[in-house]
Length: 294
Image 1 (spheres, helix red, strand yellow):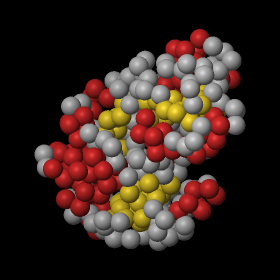
Image 2 (cartoon, one colour; image 1 turned 180 degrees about the horizontal axis):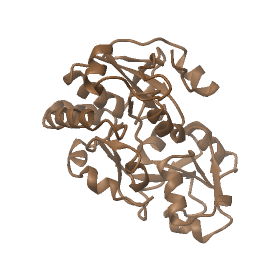
Image 3 (cartoon, one colour; image 1 turned 60 degrees about the vertical axis):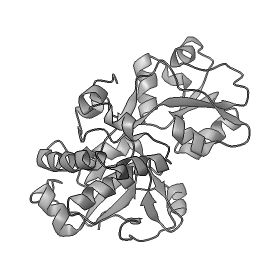
Image 4 (cartoon, helix red, strand yellow; image 1 turned 180 degrees about the vertical axis):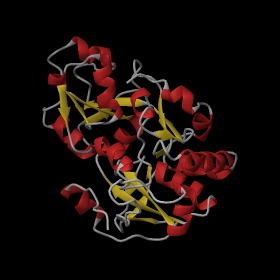
């Protein structure tokens, strides 16, 4: 069996539960279906997923994008959309593997999971490594700051302009890349392992702000913290399911069923449950989001 890559904090949160059938798919590291010594999947990707009866997905346990329930089942905006699409393709289950953002693409290419379904936002560098589906979710970015926003942080430009400011991010996340693209020095960046740690860093004064998608921060909001409006100097962000570059046929089959799902009320209902807009996801294309710098 492949090893599930989880921090101790994530392991405790997941509760060590086993996989469940849809609609409550499980947190599990599935057996590896790869050619010995190559790390590459065996057989047709579409046929292989149908035959094994499930797809392993990389997730981050960052609500509302991905979430692990107390019973160990996997949900969230991206896993729920992926599960609905795969079900239409004849793949009845998903099994989630919690992993850091910076490990998602290497793990995908090593055959540890079949799909990235974690709100791993599209941008130029990622689209050169991952074959994305058409967009499934579109999001905005914000800062979590102390109540009153004492440093008046509303833009990435303001962060770069003040070398004394410290901004917490998840390593390998879209926000980490956005700061690097903007030229914010590494000395101003505070790496944190998860969302709760980012909030704690702000409350403890180790960071002046925590940079994350608006909806993720809203889910983490606690006493002493407020969430800014959408950051205006960050490009529009969004994601689709991420596949290996070699899986062109699988992506084509997935996109076909995703398009069909987007034409139904079910798609809007799935996204609305987590605070996203189905219409926003239908209004952009893979090419547009893959043109985002970074």
